[in-house]
Length: 166
Image (cartoon, rainbow, N blue to C red):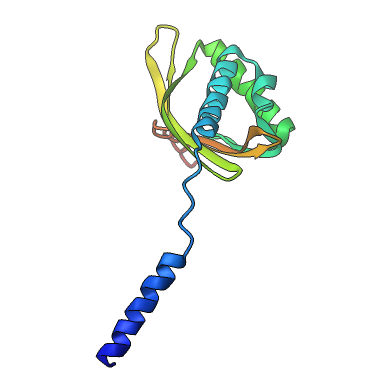
């Protein structure tokens, strides 16, 4: 390539790049991220109080709940069944769910939050800990869970010993 042609090519690239639209500034998602975290606070408060309907109202109609060591619960009816048993068991055992740190993010009408939790007994001793991830959609101005899962840090219980053959 000749020196003159190279200068023209570089000049053309500079002119084109100067004419390109500037990248749009990143959207401020602070309020939406705070709303996602507030939904988690509401969920935890409702769990500790045994207010299952308040928890179910935080989910889309066809949302999926994926708890550890339990079948997937899809839709409000299945979630209600699982959460009624779960909160009743927690209340009977005298345990409380305590939130840890979390982060949240938003892209358009989809948001996510992930964080940690602990479960304490009546004397505030930790009996479990783990992490969670929730994916939400913004519908009619309100964030609702679309997919929700959590995982215990505790190992699975050991399987029962095999029965001896006769």
